Amino acid sequence: MKVKKSLLAMCAVSAITSAAHAQSSVTLYGLIDEGLDYTSNAGGHSLYALSSGDEVGSRWGLKGTEDLGGGVRAIFDLESGFNVDNGKFGQEGQAFGRQAFVGLSSSKLGELTFGRQYDSLVDFLSPLTVNGSWGSTLFAHPYDNDNTNNTFRLNNAIKYTSLDYRGFSFGGAYAFSNSTGFAMNRAESIGAHYTNGPLSVAAAYLNVDNPNDGTNGAVAIGPNGNPDGSWTANRQRIYGVGINYTIAPVTLGFVFTNTDLSQPTATQYATLSPSPTIGAASSIKFNNFEFNAKYQLTPSLFVGGMYTYTQATYDGTSGNSAKAKYHQAGLMADLNISKRTDVYIQGAYLKLISGSNLAGTGLDVAANPDTASPSSGDKQFVARVGMRHSF
Image 1 (cartoon, one colour):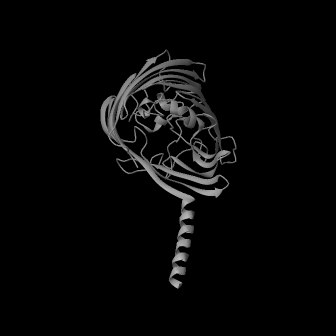
Image 2 (cartoon, helix red, strand yellow):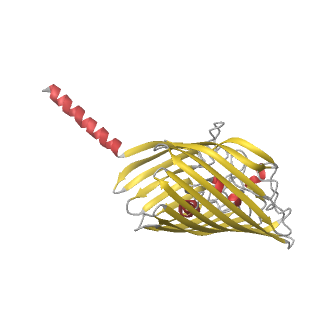
Image 3 (cartoon, helix red, strand yellow):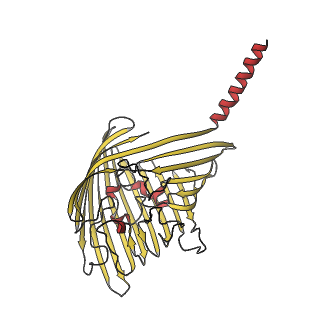
């Protein structure tokens, strides 16, 4: 009889423990991307290099949930970028530089999260671009001027993401400066997405005041002393819209973005050699027009292509002005050899058509965000053969 009671007690404890485990979970996940790059003009020379994370950034992370009852869960995500070639942290040496947040998720109200997070351009509009979906950094717009390639994240951010209402979702974020100069390095972002069968449309907006001003703000200087953001300026303001439409195995897309930089002084390329030097400017503006297409040949193989036309306008502090035009074209093929492993080949060509008075503006070189170094001239070709594995 005592044996039976002991067994019953053990079963009860086991059931309670199992139920507790079922209500909370922690997941380890990650992705490793490695490949060989060829760059036709890296500071005037051809370059062959083994490169990690060019297709999609190599990363590992921990994410978890805890059921709090009533359809509410506590959630968190800690995601670290790294370089396979040398084992170093990505995102300027930050331990969890890709994402680091905690928050609440409600089955009725959506999600509210706090920490280092993606802005609304990345969440809603970027998935309609090539570099934010089936492509890579190789196809990002010049200088990643619109952050659709996620060059920077928002620190100190409070973010809300809605539920999906019959294909429509929306969200927004506010990132604090975390300094007494309340407006010195803060950010606001908002976006929305709608899907109905083969149609997807999105729009988003981002404003960052004084990006790369100090180490504590929304877009800050990283632990290595390099800027996290793609531009150092008094203000970076971006908005964009996009549309994708799928017809059987073919998906066609178009994305437009506008970037307005007030009193820019440097780009992310300032850490490279040679590096573009921004002349005294009151503003630099970009208009990006991206056209893309993807063809799913088989369930495991697709091919895709893109073309982006970018207009840039430079207005100097002394009243001088200049214009530049960039033509960017790319192709890619990707083959899944298992559920978690794929191999790919891709190439992109960037051509700068200079206007008058462009010398000394910092816009007088071809600047593919994926390259090891900006071109020393008006064109650059980058090709990559790579392998990607997720876990």
